Image (cartoon, one colour):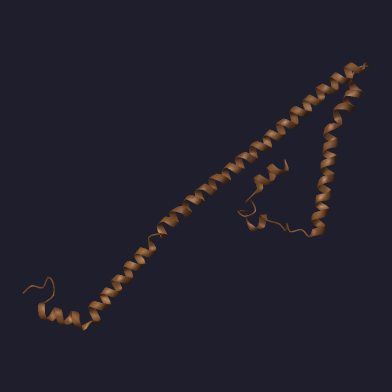
Length: 159
């Protein structure tokens, strides 16, 4: 469940509002304490999920050992089905969250590729505009072109 929850929560903090994000930074001692507390909670959870079937089976089962074993096995099967359903639910949520993030990453990658493709033409257009500016400056500033146009006329001039 922990790994599925981590997969679901990836990126949630990045896209949440500032009021929704609390102070989550922990010092080293706080991290050790939280890790120890998490392990202790896991052991209590494990004990709480394993012991009910034998205890209930020994109390509610009939007088014979065989009937008690049948009750314990039935309760253990019911518990297994319950925990399997829980695991499948969390796994389905995690799979859906990861698929959503993968789709978002694919869309972002597509936009990045489109931007790279559009910016690939910029060096050509920059060189072309520099050439046009140089040609304009040469036409205006060079006396040779002015002398040629005064002797022969300009192209397109009506005589």
